[in-house]
Length: 265
Image (cartoon, rainbow, N blue to C red; front, side, top):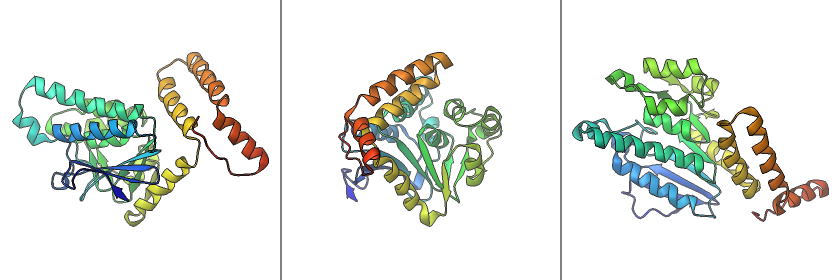
């Protein structure tokens, strides 16, 4: 891998390899808690990969013993003002929206705990691969704070009753339960985690970059539409996709029984 972060002390490290940009949250002693500075660094990293056409897949990971323990509660108490809290939660929500709006698919690589806004980050990513020792919770309720913002992402991943149980109890669920409930896509032993993430990323990289970009944008847009309007939008995108050079190349390659050569247009 080639490191492109300015420093190994950076709050978010970036490594690029073969079209995959891995963004690693880097506050291991604080279990990668999302301080304001961490969110600043994450937003900057996301903005950078969004503009980088060489990046086909983004992976979000955590350094140290955990994926992400949510917001930094010590910072929240030290900055005891409504204005700071409002700005912090707005900033966090913007990072989650940026993940949805990135042209590249985003894979969460989870080990250890993913709690509160860390669980929100998992749910906000397009795909998620977890080690079998991973645990998930929206634990704000345990300190008198309902995880309202994480609930937005959770309610769009899990069934209503499963999401509310997490939000109302603050209890942990293990990786098998997260897999069963749809919070993650795959679960593997910890020593196989990187290989599983890479396998999923490689499967996406082998597809048309144009089709991936168009498909991801349409997927999130149609979720908020009525059924008839969703089909109308999907029809328009599919017809536009079919007019592309990549679709013509893909169909010709299928008919000719050869590997397609994507042009990205």
